[in-house]
Length: 479
Image (tube, rainbow, N blue to C red):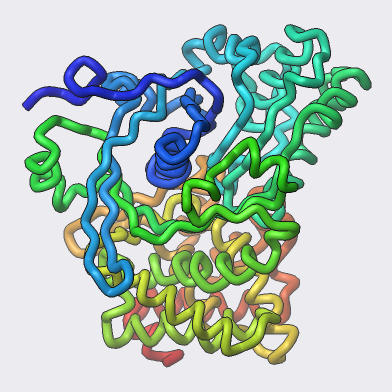
């Protein structure tokens, strides 16, 4: 079987118009798929240059295939099963700025570049004061972006027609405003001057967005059948559900430049993405974040297995309907309808969404997806939500490592967070573990969670119960 590349298949070649920070499964199955469909249906004619946001990544594999890969969409659409495979050809090349910094910064000199899109996880939009303008590159994503913007400003001598439209897709509420705040911090830190700041404000736009599509990633369980169908070797196949939603808080003129709605796609340009964000993050991502460690430590591997399991399914519904739904302010009937639709997506028979893929960077995810609900529930009900507390205890237990049966548990998170958990668990004292994790203000939470009434004792109790009787017994105790 031949390898997939632009010599072995026919593929379109388009001018570089978009810089994309991130080469992971989600961006390729969501953003690049949307760009591909927009190219087909309109005169957008946009090519993508991918920038690897961290030192270790997949741009070498992507480049070995000349940016080509297949997206396998599976699900039920209007009552009919869909199982499609399409080759996406919008990525022109990938750049590793840690190895090829000159190639990266040269992107700023291309007058055709108009958009910057990113998904660097919730931890990616962060200000790191140790970054310097002279770094090759700056370690943080916002730092890299400012390096690019400043070089563009200087190269084009402050031409306001050479500004960029920036769509962050990180799952952070008001992600555009958070990114913009980091950009201003670097402008001040690096003394880039009022001229550059004025150019950035006048020429560039950083817009808040919300993205929604379940992307399980590489279909390792069905890759043999997929390769037989496409007849070519593709190491970057990505599986996703049919549903997609991209909400962009931007004026209509931006929609004219990024004409995805004209392609019939579920891309919405709206005055405010806040209500969409609260509903989605709370009722889809919130349950995802806690069901994953609870399900995994109960012996389950996929989201569907968790929802369909008699016990863990009750846990999922308790968190969704009994806890998180109660923290939102939209009409209850509308929220229940959305939550039921989410459950249908969770049990999509065509998609194996492995919970281990969701558990990457679990602590930052819990902070943004579940902690607000925990606080609001406590404020409204006068008690802690047991499911969300157990979910946090499950994350802490998962980060202890060890084995699940014969399989070694290998958590994946920021090295400093991993080191903290290792040191805390070395004490063998669940109370010390709970207090230490909840106290990690600078590292994780931005506050000391031990100050939340009853939380330290509740997490300690759940950690002890999991350690003594196992996860399923812990779940039974709250159902």
